Length: 252
Image 1 (cartoon, rainbow, N blue to C red):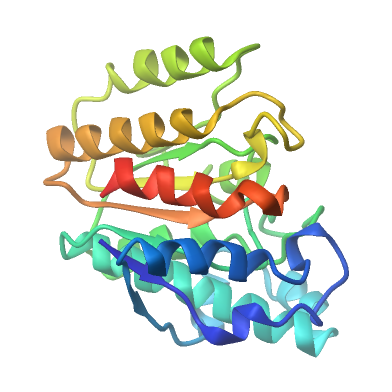
Image 2: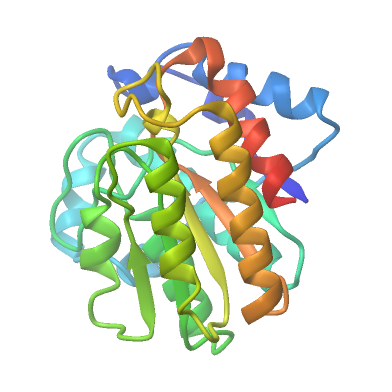
């Protein structure tokens, strides 16, 4: 499995929020490199790529802030690279920022700019590589942007688990994916703010490993092992790296 990352993601000056916090990317990449994962560097998404998921008006709104726009284009480009690796049967985790699962076609909220997941999957679809997809979003907040951007594509299913505790959360995922018979690719919006010490106050480090393993086995069963994941939330920096590594170990 490869990690998609660009050194520019270490920059925290493009915004002022928890997702752009100094040290956040470093905390993840230090652990991933120690785990022996190799890194692939993305190119920014093009305007045509962005238009697959967003209106010209929304893109123009983001363009008003050049630093944010440049970082968001690089993030979307990282998502595209991870998706293409996955299609070629090389699992990938994209360590990117800003996140994107709250970015709909015409607007966005929270720390997001462009819908990285939507752009990546719609890019594969536009190139005739896939006709269907499954997205698991385990961020602490529902990925309304993912749902909105992919809503016109019935064969793209998005699942946001809802549960009161970690055991029920894992069981909800198991139950949903047991009904999936075939898709062309498995994708994950990986929001580590579901961690017990983060906003979601729910999952333990081992749970992220279990989720990764469930997605690996699902991809093996339904889509020739094609799978990728994109970083969304996760703000408890002290444990963020080890949580990401746990997921990747299960996913790899």
